[in-house]
Amino acid sequence: MRQVSWANIGNDITQAQDIRDALSIAGLDYTVKSCDAMYNVDGETYPILGRKVTYKESDPSKIFGIVSNTYQICQNEDAFDFINYIDEDVKYLKAGETYNGLVYIIGELPEVSVLGDTIKPNIIFQNSHNGLGSIKSTICMLRVVCQNQFAHAFKDSVNGISIRHASTMDEKLIAARETIRQTYNYIKSYKNNANKFATTKITDRDLQNIIQTLIVKTTDRDIMMRPNNVIKINKFLNAYNADDNTNFRGSAWGIINAFTDYSTHAEKTTRATSKFEDNLFINNSLYNPDLDKLVNMMEEKIAA
Image (cartoon, rainbow, N blue to C red; front, side, top):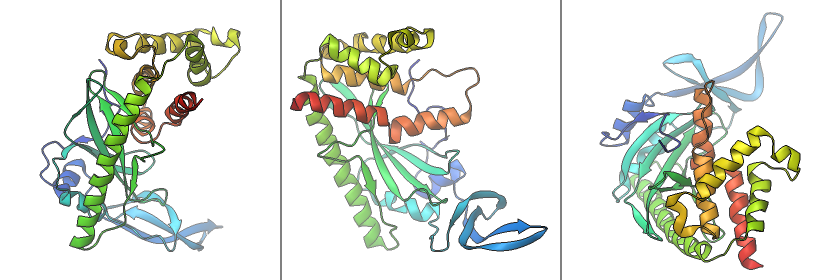
């Protein structure tokens, strides 16, 4: 059964009434503190100049990271409170924290129709406490029929929205409105680009080039024919030739649909860990460099 990349991570927050409720359900309503970063030499401890440690107040053994002395902690409730001011029908789905410190809340906007497909726009709101991220939102489009996820910044519209910490009601309203404004701009761009790609023809040679560049990442035929690479190629081609891709086969949009299917539904091994699930979510909901390469290849074909 095909699932979205966040199916096996985080906590179900569909019953949450507001952000405080969502954070409580997901166990993300903790307080983050900081203290001087220290190092030990021969049993003596010394401060690391210019650095501090962020940690969970209720469990000091939970260290988020070592950050600069100027780093400002933004508690999860403060970071996400602006979502309460979004004057749109946003449905809460999941909330959690990845192994590398990304705190996320996943919301869903009402579905739209794109080239006859039902698409659900998702917004992934993010925060962190390790200095590696900031408050932001990422738009991820979900093709319902096969649960494919598409997260890509177009040249004319980005899918990542940086959000300043909003402390006053006016600032929260501005952040909420800007998030929705950019989200709907992106949805419009997504529709326009889908139409453009759907009318761009793909040859067998193009298909072979994509397989070599993005699926097996080699032009050496002997390496391509190795069992593990044959499995990858067949999986991609099965997605490309699937019934739900029939209308787009032979087009750039058909290739993109097949690749997002292939990427979103990576095979889980018997030794797969929670880290695998987190990476599946991060690579398909937030940033997939190979998808960026593919879309750029298709755009170059249009421009040629």
